[in-house]
Image (cartoon, rainbow, N blue to C red; front, top):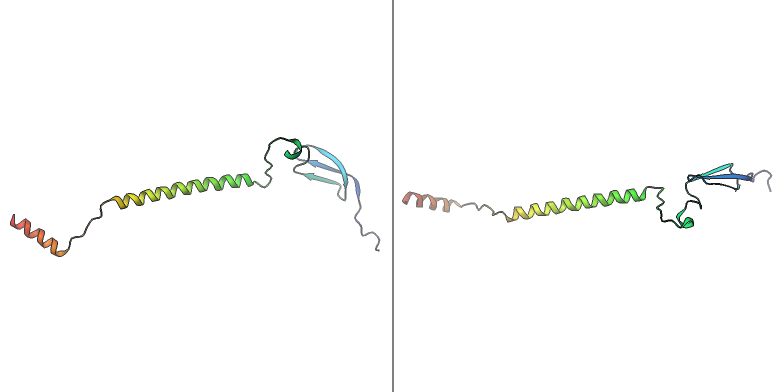
Length: 108
């Protein structure tokens, strides 16, 4: 085997969490920083808390709001179309009908 190809192991690697908790472990790095640890994770603490590091909940709520807005807009368009249909369509008179109306007016 080749010599000096294995990484050097650090027995005093300090892991620090965003909550402020820190502990020592073995690693090839000198220090590690993490977003969540066993001291603040809901599984270990038993507290009901959302861990949203990728902003997935915010994305979902924005999509939900956009969907409700679109639904309101489509309902408004449907109502507008129904109102247009309800209005009596104007019938165009034929030339014959116009001439008949004129003759009736002249005779009266």
